[in-house]
Each structure stands twice: as C-alpha cells, then as structure tokens.
Image 1 (cartoon, rainbow, N blue to C red):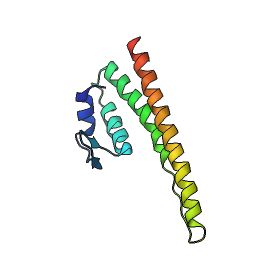
Image 2 (cartoon, one colour):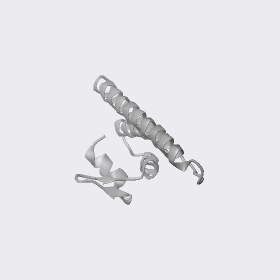
Image 3 (tube, helix red, strand yellow):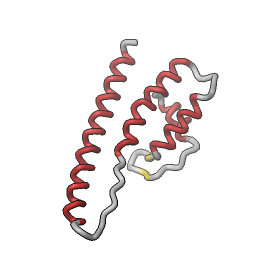
Amino acid sequence: MTSYQAQRITKELKPISKTKRGKNYNIQEVILSINTLLENKRIQKRTRTSLKKVIDILIPTLDNIIPISFTQENTSELQQLAQQALTTTLEVSRKLAKLERRSLEIKGRYE
C-alpha cells in the first residue's frame, strides 16, 4: 500500500493515540474506511487488490480483544492468569499478522 492510499483511508478518521512518528487509528474504523473506498468503481484493479489484502490482514487482529468480568473473590489470581493469557494471545496474533504481511509482500513481488 502506498502512503497516498494510507492518507486516503485515514483522512476522515480521528486518531485514538499518537506515537513519535505517527498516529494510531481504531482498526474497525480503518476497515470501514477501506470498504467505503472499495465501493468506488473508479479504483484500479491493482489498488483494489492491495486494499483487500490490507483488510485480510486487519480482520484477524479484531479477535485480540477478550472481555473479562471479575468479582471480588480471587481477583488477583484471575487477573494474573487473564493478563498472562492476553499477553500470550496478543504476542501470537502479532507474530501471525507479521508473517501474513511478509507472505503477502513476497507474493506481491512475484505476481
């Protein structure tokens, strides 16, 4: 994806946080923005393919959120276990997303 495409996708979005060199956006909003952009019939085939690949990478990251409700009983042990599970899940998901991006980059070079 080009920087121009990234700008078009995030143009109307409000960042949820900022880092030293960039802005962070809500993944669901980014996916909706990409889908809106894909509805434009004038988008070129190569751009459309690139945007669909980005969506394919972003959608699995939505499964990283695990809602947990705690009661007063045994909360410290549950919180530790939940934190450990969440940390492990996020780490695995990040690694899988990174491998998926790398795979798509390699495929893109040879298409």
